[in-house]
Length: 270
Image (tube, rainbow, N blue to C red):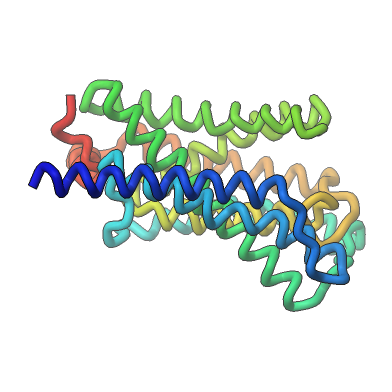
């Protein structure tokens, strides 16, 4: 039995290493099978993600974290999806300040696949593995849960500072890091209530789809994303939903916390 367990662990670690290697290969090797640049750009961004997602999924399994139980409390999707959909610049779009450059179905499909894999990868990594590790570090009570919740959201936001090394401007990167801390708290709330990593991954994917659609780097269009009406609408919606989420986290029932820790597999760890 011990040899069998050791063999499984060895296979799992080998699979993780291979997945990481394939991720690195597709990240740095240029592949351009299409005539249109947008398709090649989407393909280049998508190809590393399945292997990166597989690597973190296998890592979570190796750590013993169980992330795919039947989802609960699906009402938590409503405020989360409200924020995600509000990330679309409606005011700018209807004012004619934004324009789609690529409206082909294949381009939309590729963009949606990209957003879905990014959401799944980052949620398994931050709300799955990182959150699980933090719950093991802190006390198994409400205080420990809140520390894990806040620190995992903080780390998620600060990780976006790495965009500085890809040529992003300092101001834009700092702004992205700040609001990513808040969205990290939103995704963590979705995980706390649903107890299934697919729920925050779905919210994350919708959030990215709505926010990145008109960006020149990853999206299918261009134009002025933020104007005053868009900013005010986002501020109002985020403030209302933010207050609701903070209240829900602060009053998170002990029974749900215990169940979450049991599902994660950390309830009996020291």
